[in-house]
Length: 363
Image (cartoon, rainbow, N blue to C red; front, top):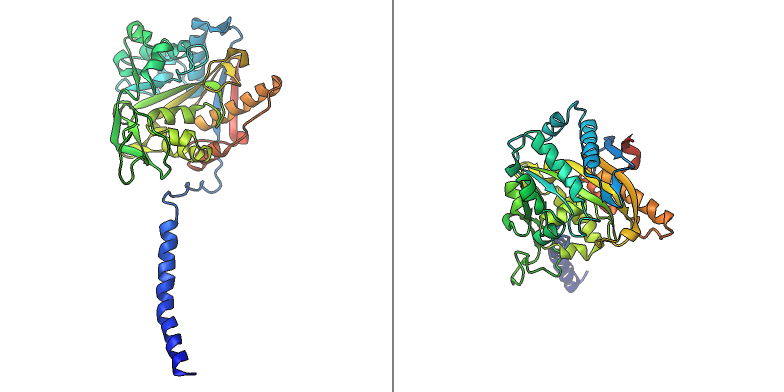
């Protein structure tokens, strides 16, 4: 071998490891910053329980009948908890020292969003169980939506508080971070701010991170274009943090962000999902078309309330029911995307497999 060839070979031997190292560093630098969703536990055989209470006279001319709704809530909560009295049922979920937030979805108004009669039945049950009224909060993302839906009347009627999570302000020590950037609202903490990392954080409302110790989530059975159902997971997470438009405009990111936000630590070793002690689906009326607008002509009266500790199971069953009602109405099923709910199952928030959901019906 010539001296030049030996020299070239030596250079290659010295340079090759350096090139390999540079290549590895480059690949690592370009790797996604987000950790993948945690894998599900092996041989996961956990089951979910859902209680469906039905009363054919629960509504009259599409309006809830108050005393019948109260009876349905009482039956649902006692059956789900296995307690013999309504008070004991509520006190198995909350204590008289808790500050309980009843999360509603108020944007579509009182006829298509969470119906005030259902929220009122929960409030009356908690007060009867001994919870001080000043420790009960009806909340949603925007105070104006709550006012238009009639919820501010509850302050005078029951002595409770009605609050918007935006108006409560955001906790800059608790946030969800994702590299995705998108349009921001003027109510977002980092709106119009410039600099490295701006727009990557969604801050948790102080109402959720600092005030509420238990949450009861009450959502309507309502169609949503991206997720199939404006359900328990989507409703709670999008009302609890700011800078959400970036997810709502990107279905793939929404499917990942919603369950990860739901499991976001906000109280030390507590996570948001662990503080949701009860989820109720207001299925008095199922709106299978129209998304966030109240459109009763695209609705079916079911006269049901659904109860569970598992928000994923309830969302999956709601999606199933909405698709069924769309088929009956001759409307194409436009969304069978299960990614969000499967991701939630991977994070062990709940059960997305309908074969592992036990349904108890109370006629």
